Structure formats: C-alpha cells, structure tokens
Image 1 (cartoon, rainbow, N blue to C red):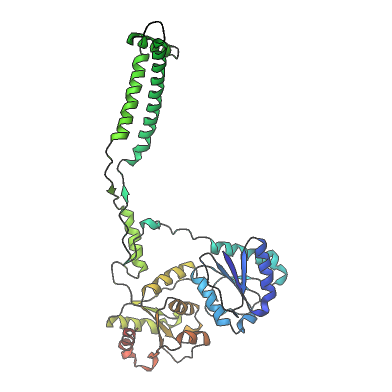
Image 2 (image 1 turned 60 degrees about the horizontal axis):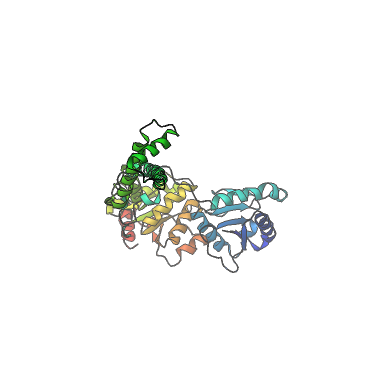
Length: 398
C-alpha cells in the first residue's frame, strides 16, 4: 500500500513533514506534484491532497483535481487544507482535515490524517443485509458458474465418524485382549480351548469392574461393531450429490443486482443520467417529464443525495448503468459540487456527454476540459413547448 501525497511545489515543506510523520508509522509514501504525471493507483493505495492558495495557481491544478476525484470515487481520498483558501468546485462539500495552524500539525492534523488514511485503505464492511459474493447474481452476459453441490445429511456425518472411530478403537482393544489370552493359553502345557479363552477374557474383565460372565460377550460385541463400521466405510456406495436449493433470501441479492444495473421492479434500465443543480429543478424537471413522454428513459435524482459514501455508491452505480449523461448547464450547475463530480464520473466510465444549456452561461475552465469536442444543445433558445422533443432528439444520438 502506498500513500500518494499530491501537493503544489510551493507546499513541498509541508508535504515532506507529513511524509516523515507517515513513514515513522510504517506507511510507504510517494510525493507527487503532477510535473511528471501521476502513477496509477493500486487497489489499496490512498491519495492525500494538500490544498492551499498555491495549489489553486499551480499549472497542474486540473490534473491534481482529477487525481483527487479518481481517488474519491474509490473511497481512497483524504483532503487536507494547509490554509483557509477556498476549495475547488467538486470538493467544497467533502470533509477536509484542517492543517492551517502549522504549530499544531504534529499534534492534531497529522494524527488525524493517519486515522483517515487507515480508514480509507481498510476494506469496507458488507452493507446491512448484503449477501456474500457466492450468493450474488452474476452480471448479465457473464459465464454461469456450475451449481453448488451439497450432500444430504451433512449435519450428522461428523457424529457418525466420531462414533465409528471410538467403536473401532474399542474393538481393537478387545481383539488385543482376546489375542493375549489366547496366546497365554497357547503356550501353556496343553492347547487352550474356547472355554479357556472365554474364562480368561472374563477374568480380565472382572479386574476392571465388569460382572463375571459378561466380559467375553462384551469383547465379541465390540469386535463385531468395529467390523461393521469398517465394512460400511469400505463398501458403502457414495451418495449422489444434489444441487443446493436456492434460499428465499437469495432473491434480495438478485433484486439488488438489478437495481445496480439501473432496473427497478423488472423495468428496463435508464438510458441517460441527468446531471443538474438543485436550484434549477423548476426548469429541469418539467423538461425531463416532457422527454420521458417522447420515449427515452432518464435517471433523475429529484430528492438529492448527500456528498458522502451513500452519494458515491448510488451515483456511481447509476452512471455505470446508463449509456450517456445529459448535463443541464447553467450558472448554478457550474458552481455545483455534485454536477462537477457527476461529469467526472461520466468521463471516467467513458459515457457520452450531452451539455444542455438551460440558460446563457460560460463554462469555467474545468468544465471546458470535459466539454471539449462535444456537441452542445442550447435548450434556452428553443421555445418552451418544443424543448421536450428537441432534447429527446438530441438524446437519441447519445
């Protein structure tokens, strides 16, 4: 596991101090400024982004933001503020570690960063009610695994073999006793008879507290029982393996897999994800309802989701399932942290982007990065009655 500290060149002293602190606690650390690009993140790596006024003006700011959002999408990002300069759009509502007071970094900020790095690199616990991997439904088109095989009566096999081992040991002891008595009689003055053997075994059994006259029959019974268990183990026919029956709770993982693919209640998955600012709901929602009337299915978050882990999980699954993302562009959208992250996720998962301008607005530099070479739709220049069909036609090409 590697902790990548991303920072502006001017913040090299703070990055070096944090590196020393982390390495003393057993972490492998790599510092990066973007001048030579960024190393690919491995599965257990974490990114610590040091943000300051110098980061805002570094020539590699956009690449550093992309690096940070890439780690955020995987739950591997730790944000740190070295001063009180404003955070960039897309990260303003995410939690930061306050390291603006330099004198307390060793006592407060750096230990907090260690805790967050450990939490970010720890495997996430399964969600409540989530089935293990073996119970999850395979992805559509994936090769079907062979049915699990189970044997009937598995619960009693352990008890059976415990009894069998004990019986075999007891039978072996009985054989040893009878063989010893027979051998003593055999080397005597006259060959021993069956009566002599029975008497000798009974006398041996009486020494250990058994009633007189039952020792020979007890030994013979133990030998017979041991022979039966041995014969059963050697000559029994193997039981036929049967396919394990799916349990009723297996239906929950299948339903969850359908939801992750964008389908709810057996309906077809949404084809387009709509990214918009909540301040534009009065304009966006009527247009989307008109688009749905034309046929295209849309994924639209009407209630809003927080910026934490739940937001990441829901939005990532939704964007993965669609074929394109429609960005409802406005001044509010260009200031929205949610919209910025959704555009980034669309780019990360290679989804088609359709910028739909619902008002006159100039995209900032970081949005232009994603909109370069993409066809725009100026919906605000279209009569209101024609906006639904116009957007539906544009989405058909996505």
